[in-house]
Image 1 (cartoon, rainbow, N blue to C red):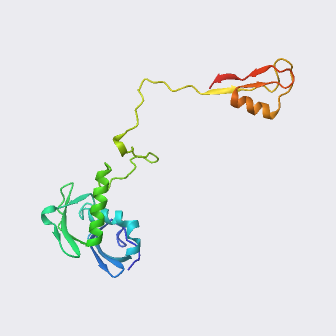
Image 2 (image 1 turned 180 degrees about the vertical axis):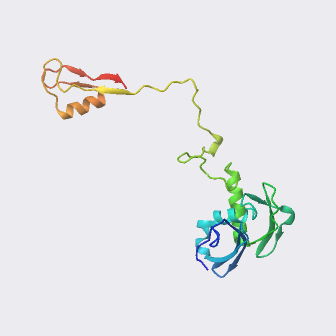
Image 3 (image 1 turned 30 degrees about the horizontal axis):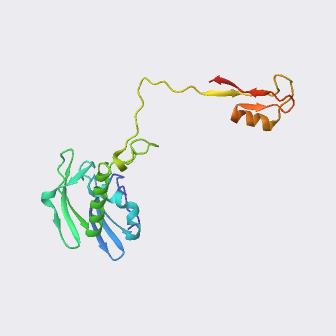
Length: 203
């Protein structure tokens, strides 16, 4: 018995599919089966449920034959007072004959998660970020970022060349003047009063 949800079978290291999730006091009892047919039971505290409700939903709505995605079969749905019973249909057409039995609280949480995902335009159990480091488009107001034309060239990068001495009186410039010249591109020489312009160069 473990305190955290198991993801793989201890015997063959295959993916575990959750068949029954029962509630007992402040814990959840889970009965699972792997793709090789080995059965395994474990318990987990309900206090950790928000952290792994997504994992539970994925493993409940997975095919016990191939391990792929599955959807609840509405024809077999039976809603009781404390639990929901249903079978799933594999998207690849496998014959999954096992019935799922899920506690009422977890079943409601899974339904809310699916509805929220569809409202945000994300398919259920799809990864929220298709590519690492890329955020999804904003959904408020239906605004999407504008796409740049394919023939548009990027802007050239410019480097400022700063002289260390005044070009007129050859007086050395101080560090403060050089930093000011890098920011403003123009600075006044303290000795001759001439304006010094920083030169631009494309990188």
